[in-house]
Image (cartoon, rainbow, N blue to C red; front, side, top):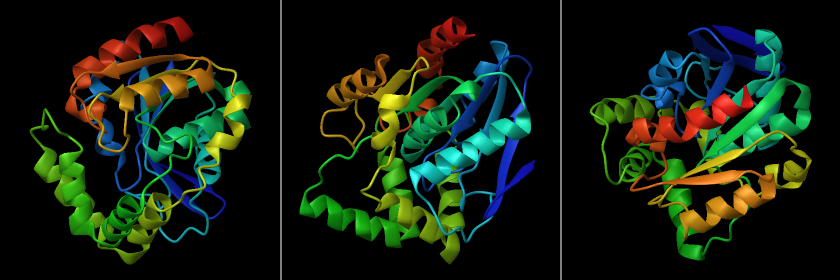
Length: 260
């Protein structure tokens, strides 16, 4: 299904019945990032909507704004399209800042947020890491290699297939530009509105996430900023929902029950 917003069209799908959980993947990924977690949430009694980021997956390419504020606006537009009472938003990586933006922009539509290894504040990077990011941003193949290493412990059975789809997607210059712009964005505007978020928040973080110098410490900082709680998932990397979907569900379902 699709929803039209200023600047383009967003792709999403919906399964299950019950309170609404909206799942948004990180940059360079598609809504199938939640393919292992989604059935567990549906079985627990939730309606699960997964959406592609602007410029990614089946959403249209060629947008003029890839900021977290713009991603937040897309999520709000999707919530308006769904016209459901307050939803819980899950956002991985860059989309962690997107769901913070959505909660600040439309608090009446957001019942809770769950950043999953999310970037909701700027973290200083040394010169070597910045150079590596520029290389990855320019190369679908290198992105595919990174994506594999970001699952350090439990490789999903279909990881090779999923990575191949991401590499193929990023061979499109416009979609590669969407990923590149987000990846190199050091002005994470979610940080400017995090203090306005008033809904319950759960920060999920993989203990072995290679994107953070100290994942557990980062989780606690984010939880403090959001006045929420943090759960660190042992052995998981940047994508715990696909690496350890059972553990992710175990951490998430009590929070959903309390919110709804």
